[in-house]
Image 1 (cartoon, rainbow, N blue to C red):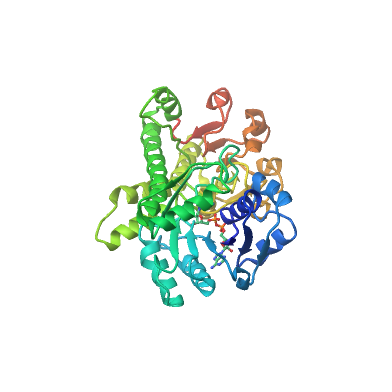
Image 2 (image 1 turned 45 degrees about the horizontal axis):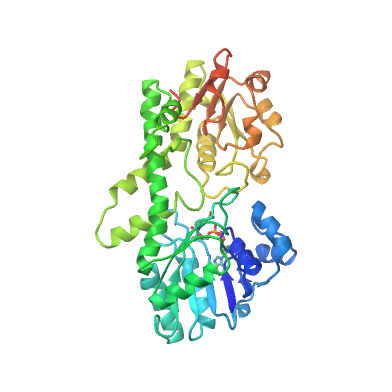
Length: 424
Ligand SMILES: NC(=O)c1ccc[n+]([C@@H]2O[C@H](COP(=O)([O-])OP(=O)(O)OC[C@H]3O[C@@H](n4cnc5c(N)ncnc54)[C@H](O)[C@@H]3O)[C@@H](O)[C@H]2O)c1
């Protein structure tokens, strides 16, 4: 079969590599980004991911900025972004655009698989009508639509595109089986056939909203426990030895990435359209969105203890990326932290070894030298190495550890006021 992957980012590129590596199918890739296509054509991974960097050396497949590369494809796999607008509404532009591109080359018997995260109903209400209108063919009769939501966690040393179990739903049960068998041909993981497309769509959304809600819960606890002087980190550790029905989640300065802070809005909006208010999800989003501001509040509070005010301080921010040891800054809370500080502080200096374009200085030392106070926004390994001495040497008076990476006890006998998020 000829398999076309549309969108060659964090999801599409590893997937295309896996199909090329482990199956006999011909793989082609299409993307609108000239930079990504250039990278792949020059034998470089277009994303920051160890596995992808290994894979690109072992496989080769044709990619293009020209959609005619999709001609003759039997399976189209759509891996384009599903972002939100500034007003927190789903932006289905990329999914609609990619669907129209597939329609140009769709033939009888083909399958269009959506891997992008979408809310229940998108395949039936948007993808199917678009394909039917553009091709004059009928979904479930002439071609199939399937949803196989991606669960990849870039940078994860254990779980990758090859071994993460999958769920598949499709317009017809036969289409579902064909799609599942195709995934089984190159994955070393369970591929579960679901009864309906909507259930497959909903599965991914509840996984990510589950995470958002649980993080919001500990972020709310962090705020009340800070006020009560209880270290939530220790409490979670204590609760975690319960062998059933407790799953630890940890508080921090906010939630970032392309999934957790975005996907809940797809479900919230879908529910709103049918007249249902997902209050719980909205509240979780509000709490998690408020954490950057809370982090700055913590900083202002400890500055007051030192008789200092934020507007006279140069604040150094350690980290821009949304998670450790990568340079992905999509929806990163660090960006909000920086923008709040730009309003409030005398000056803001930023350093992230993985995001040098967003850094105002070139090293941790230079940041510590320039700053009066520090906010840590990303738990990079390089930052974990820092000790009390490093901060004392540079006369840092206040330190907010937005990811709770340092040992708070180590600051007890120093002149530095250390505060984590929810550490009492
Ligand atoms: N990144 C993750 O960890 C992750 C995990 C699971 C699911 N997802 C979901 O997978 C989807 C893709 O996410 P991603 O992280 O790979 O995004 P990404 O931004 O890394 O890659 C998407 C690619 O699609 C391309 N693109 C956009 N519109 C296009 C179009 N009309 N035609 C062709 N190419 C187009 C972009 O240029 C980009 O290269 C999203 O729905 C996301 O929620 C992401």
